[in-house]
Image 1 (cartoon, helix red, strand yellow):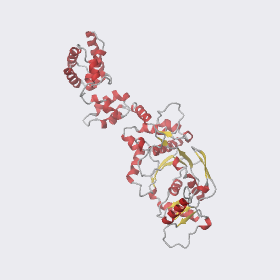
Image 2 (cartoon, one colour):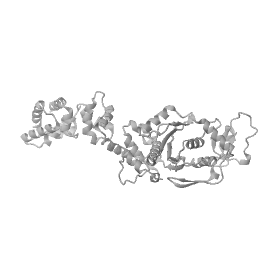
Image 3 (spheres, one colour):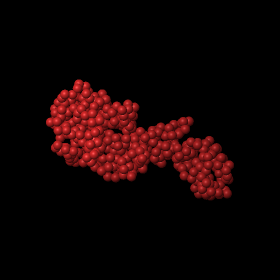
Image 4 (tube, one colour):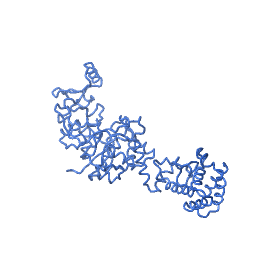
Length: 465
């Protein structure tokens, strides 16, 4: 059995969609699981819609997700001669023919079919009526494959046996009148040339498979094994699209998702690793568990709430230095990374997305402009509090050790002297320093803010009392 070779073959007519990324992930996992090769091919024969910058963006997104081609990236635009050679080889073998029908004639034939009440127009000719003679030199023509009458049957890795009625196929185009190849022709030529053993792709291609198998059969080439993956649906159970929000890898990348989190999430869209209820799986675990048998024949539902949770799980395990670097772009440019590392270490277990730092950790970077009204009424209404507050501030001005443990011990000493519970001073202090009634641990916050910032904020709050 030949070593496994799979390919991901996007068209550079748009960004890398989540559905395309899922196809790439499945192919990559299968290649790594079997010790095979993962190859990338850019299908850019549609010159009007293909854009070079989009091809580069797709490759960049794949790299960001941790997937790069194990060989040189193949561009179909470099292989036009090979497609022409295959088309004409099929003509020579009597499996295809030159079609000189003009666009106007073709439209008239479609119109006649509509008038007859036919649901769709299928172009078919009898073999004995195919004529390639007595044509002026240089007259444009298309090349069409002669559709058979017998059924085409193949075994799909996801759906099992699939059968197509040969009589329902039209004589499909291989080369257009302008000389450009169709998908059916180019994909077979490329997959054969690249030695592809397994084709894992979306369900929308399942109707293309019988046409491609026919070409393999005529050329006496061994066809790859096929597995067609169902669509990804939005929460409303309709095909995932822009109306559901972000749909491309680039958009999720910009929103601050970690590549490993997105990769893990995508891998579980329509595939089960058989790991019980576990959903946070390392890349090595995903590779070890992956099999085409585990791909579900029903459509997967994209749940961004679950993706946010998964992202938080990955954020919580990042080295603090890496997390800090992720947070810096969401903060003022004047903030030092060393300071951000201290904040990151304290808030890491609370973050779901890196941009959460803006709101969750705002008090680390800006003095509060106001204090929570309910908190003021609840914690600053004690008539004795201003006096205690003032005494505490005086003590902080002369403290040598401004570490969290020393600060907590000192405050509890004060509370014992005043004969009150520590909470009676901790909550008012938190409100004064952060403007909020809920924050990270008070003494850790004080240590990170430092003496001068703490004193400035406390004195400002005292002035309000």
